[in-house]
Length: 287
Image (cartoon, rainbow, N blue to C red; front, side, top):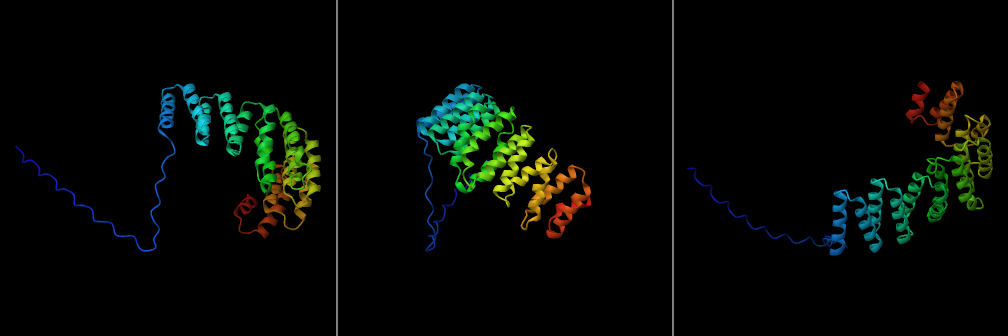
């Protein structure tokens, strides 16, 4: 028979830790979870229900925990559970409860807007859109307004989406800091709705409000394929000193899409002369 192995030697006691160097920072205290035993048990049951396919029960348990604690992570989890189950109305209800509990939450607003759009409930978008703009710092409000046409572009009824933005942004037409952005945003929405004449009129109004703003120029670039006269807005902007190189490149791209190669080449040569470090314009020019 094999000789039994010798028992392992006991581990040597650890040497005492050296005292901390004078002036070194003390070890920060551990951050313990704020979840108590009943809440932990409730969340565990909710996740177990979800894992066994009882999505409705899991959603209700998670939403109840979120309402009791006003915890944003739990509201987010309840919304995720509903979205994974393609239960749009339940997901919307979770974001509505989230906004009631945490009215300052920007994430809740954005999720509610996205869900309303996916449900094609444009008539319910006005309130959360107004709340989102109002909750945005004044310095960032114009940029947010400019992005709104992209937010509502998924709407099935483009005309209704344009009317919605007209209504929501009317309050910002009287403010010098947001008027240009509001005019251009509604113009973009009307262009998406197929009303190029109205979009061009709004682009011109936005340009007249601020000759150096790039926002009306972006709308004019989009208009060029259906309203050639919009090009004058782009040209007048690019002739002024300090024109953004991105807009000149955008103008060149628009000219290329219209097969105006000589005009596009002239714009790209300006870009490569003024910004020779940019590789993209060189490649486009070569092509």
